[in-house]
Image (spheres, helix red, strand yellow):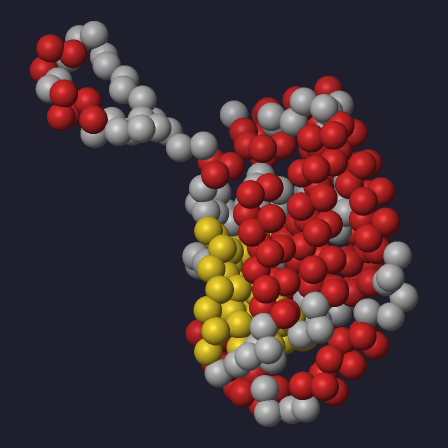
Length: 281
C-alpha cells in the first residue's frame, strides 16, 4: 500500500503477519488533511471547509478555498454564497501550526500567509454577497474570514480571539478586514490582548456579527429564512451594493501582500519558533 509505513515492536513482531503489517498506517501529514466542499441549492452556493485540527487552515486548504469562492462567484446560477465550516465546536482555529513550525525561510513564510490574503481578497472581489455562518470559536485567521464576509451570523458559542502576538507574530494579514468591520479600537484591543477570549455578544456589539443565536439549529433556521428572502431580490442591485460595501479597498492586493511579508519574516524568529513549538508539544 503506497504511502504507508510499517512499525514493528520487537516484542511482538513474531505475532504479526504481512496482512497485520499492512493495517498499521503511517500518520498522515496534517497539512494535507481536510476538505473544501461546495454545494449549490436554490441558487445559493454553500462552501464548507474542514480540518481535523479544529478547522485550522493549512496552505492547501486556503488555496482550495480561494478557488471555490472565485468559482461560485463566476457561476451564473449562483446569487448568494454561504461560508461555513464543519463540526460543532470550532469555526476556525486560524493558521495551521503544523505548517507554521516547518517554515524555514521568508519566501515560504510569505507564501503561507498569502493564502489568507488571497481568500480575503477573493471574498472582497467576487460580485456575490458572502454570508458567514460562525457556529463556534474563531481564532486569528478565523476572525479574519468572518470579518471579510459581507454579512455574518453566529451562535453564542462563537467567541473570538486574535492570538497571533502570543506566538511572536501579529494579526497583520487579517488586520484590514478586522479593522474595516470592527474599527481600530476593537482591532487594537484584540491584537494586544492576545490571550483572552471575547464573547459572541461583544463581537456583535463591535459589528462583527449581525445576529447571535442560542444554538446552531436556530442559526441555521434563520439563515434559511434570511437567504430565501435575499435570493428573491434583484441580483444586479446586490452586486452594486457589494461594490459600495468594499469601496476604498482597491489597494488591498498590495496591502495584504505587504502584511504577508511581515508575518513571513516574524514567524522565523526564535520567539515565534519556541512559542509555536511549545503549543504543539
